[in-house]
Amino acid sequence: MSLRVAVLGAGHFGRFHALKASRQGDNPLRLVALHDADPARAAQVAAECGVPALPASEAIAAAQAVIVAAPTRFHAALGRQVLEAGRHLFMEKPIAATLAEAQVLADLAESRGLVLQVGHIERFSAAFRAVVAAQEGSRAVHWEAVRVAPFRPRSLDVSVVLDLMIHDIDLVLKLAGGPPHTVEAVGARVMSDHADFAVARLGFPGGRAATITASRVSLAMERRLRVLGNEGEMSVDFLNRGLAMLRRGGAEPVATMPGYGIDRAGWTDHDSLEAEQAGFARACAGEAPPEVGAAEGMAALGVALAVEAAISAFD
Image (cartoon, rainbow, N blue to C red; front, side, top):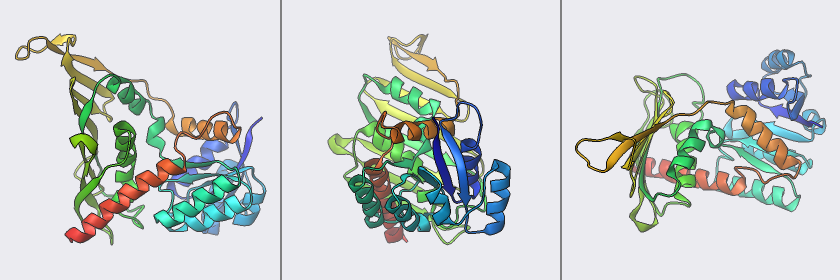
């Protein structure tokens, strides 16, 4: 039996959520309603999906669970409305604009026994699962993540930290197994009223560290991850779907490093949004906890806000 869902927010990513949830077949979700603050946009996307465009309260009432994909400044108010109506909540990242707002949502969900999943979609990618599998058994001491792209005039209501960097913050926290104890960052505004590029350095217990770079004003698209540890180096090119590990006993010998070689791997991409929505459906059915719950969403938000604070101090 499919889970009846409504989508609040029919912008760029909200439309993707709605289209995916409206797909027929073995989809665990069934889109029943859609809402957007712009009536024309709501009507357009609702027509694409074959569902009614309704006021927010009516859309929530028609559903068992709600996907909120509105701009970040509306997350707290819409999330509370959903949870107070007794509906499960999928909140697109970031979980809220502030930690205080996020805590209210987390407490509401827990007190009412409702699912609160945060939309850190990269956790569901085949690429990240390949990285996790490759890192098993080794001790990583440094992570270097880069996520940059040419300028596009969207999501400019938040900084590049909450727009792009928060994805890699969440992934690094997952790989590191906990939060950093120090956060340093630099960044600047270029095309918007918020930081459009940022470089953050996170310090973890035991001397481990991470450097994360994000930009939405770059010359070209780039997404990569480098992991350094006692096994050697792992380099991941997400755009070209390649993973290479330099380590002892690797298959391709390295002339200058006797006993070491390079192992290469790839992955078969799957639909990460489909996997994310399926995970939400399982959580709502009580089959498994959400892959990214309120605690994980708040951890990523806390680091992202610390990065923004460091950039403000730098300015």
